[in-house]
Amino acid sequence: MTTKTGMVVGIGRAHAKAILLGEHTVVHGTPAIAFPLPALPVRALARPAEPGTGSQVPADGHFRFTVGGTDTALSGPRVAAEEALRRWGITDTTVEVVVECGIPLARGLGSSAACAGAAVRAVADLHGLVVEPGELYDLVQCGEQVAHGRASGIDASAVLANGPIRFHQGRAEPMPIGLDAALVIADTGVPGSTQHAVAGVRRRLAEDPVRAGSLLERASGLIEAAGDELSAGAAESLGKTMLDFQELLAELGVSTPHIDALVTAALGAGAHGAKLTGAGLGGCVLALTEPASAPGVSAALRRAGAVRTWTVPTRALHAGATPLSATTSEPGTHQ
Image (cartoon, rainbow, N blue to C red; front, top):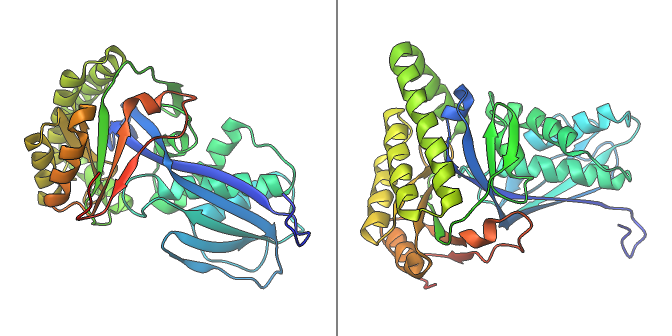
């Protein structure tokens, strides 16, 4: 794109994601199911810059950095964009990238992966290049290894997907949906740390390999059941499966009393099931309910301490669907 002042600017976009089932266990070989949240977008702008341009610490999700110059501030998006320029043989230029992130940070919704994906797309657009999906995934993964350490790849896939996916051992496949329901996402207001949570789960599994094998086998069974229930439109069964997986995540040590209270509040308001989504130890809770019950579930979650909620109709999750008709509520407001 060329601005009114004649400056060439590259634009890249990505979006949030939520994991339905499979967080943590996917790192240890199980499948996982995730879906995109286009209603929580990221936009990145890339433009030529002077070598001395520096970074800006994220504020309300907005930040900037440079690649190809003297900027050494380490972040997933910068690493991904710099690796992209290196692979493309573009080493004689300095590029400033401005990221406008509409995803709450450190909430398990894929903000780091989405920012990296949008940044790479913006840098590619600036240079008139089209990034193939496989290469884009690899580049985002480079950034995720910096942001989170050992990253399964599910975030890198889901923030670039246009519909639900089943992710397993680095491969993402479209996931069919026959469900007419609503998903209510509640922000606990507590930032999570993916690296800390993943390391804690790894320690727990290493302490008892026999129990770990049984737990991962149970997780795989629940995830496969959820895929069948999602396709068949079996909302009540899927809700029960979500609760079973929440119990498993609690065994792994990544739930908290606040998360447990939000799950209980959602069930009390009529949700079929609820669980944490993402790394846990904070972040967000995901509740499955009937569309007509979604406002009541959302209100109950806010009364129980959620700082905001988003409601996503499952019919908006189909690949190729129009942008999600999600709603956002702050404390004290009504949907």
